[in-house]
Image (cartoon, rainbow, N blue to C red; front, side, top):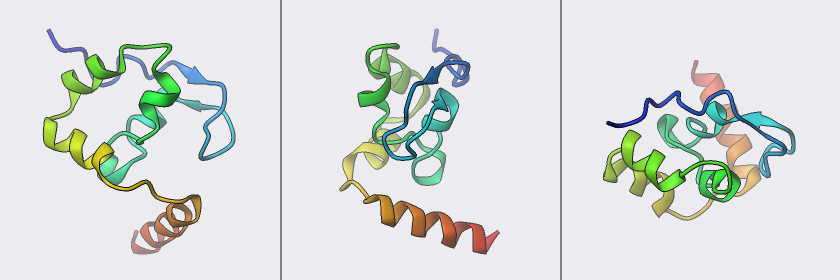
Length: 89
């Protein structure tokens, strides 16, 4: 039986390498492209949860490829993209 997407949302990671502060798991599972997981999710959470199992039970192979398959964005690219997205809303 697949675990629900919210199964680990109450967990907090001590420091997000991209934001520089503590964030809950729910931020990491939806902070990537189109609410897909952050590409650093395996690196940050791998010692606390079964990341491959979680990803396989929640996302399709195509979504996983989109989230983890492309080149990494720089911090500046992420900030600029966030600003553009907030202007659109």
